[in-house]
Length: 257
Image 1: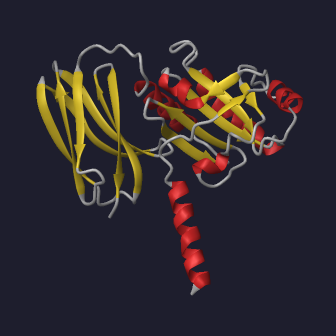
Image 2: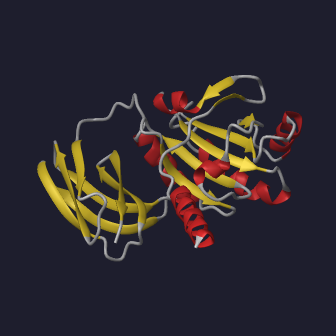
């Protein structure tokens, strides 16, 4: 009986970790001896693309994809998307990590070799592992191991940027709510528009993959509500992205059948 209870406890802990939706804070020095506090960066409106590597040969391609996704925002959002490259357990010499990043064309990365930055805070370990973090709620917008989708990472970065502070948006969507949350069979998205606009509503999973298109069409100014069928969505965490013209807003919800 004790073994069974222990086994069930381990399963529960594992399930909790895999459902991690908020970042874990850390304060430590990078390989250039500059101190960083994760939550301070996120509260300032920065988006962090955090990649753990051994480093190893199999880490190169996926790490370069994550780096390219981060760099693709350097012109449109200068200084807001940061690429953090961390040693998996914080024991690799910084000189080795710096050399690996330079050799594999990731020059604009901040390197860390510090055990304070733990990949196990975000579920199972990967090689590499990528998480994308943003917003004053310190949200995990992307969490994947070993192989990655460039388009999903770009979508996650966009969602994280929209959740950041200090963003001046034209007045269009001025409210968005979702109820019930957690959802079971269905949930309702309610929102207000200040002006007539082309609207799209989509649902993305925790790794930034689109799982459902909810609505696409032109709507007048005023109050709107759309019911979402959740019966075919697996249990887990999702993001609703509402786009009206050039404005996008994202709200997180969960499904529990």
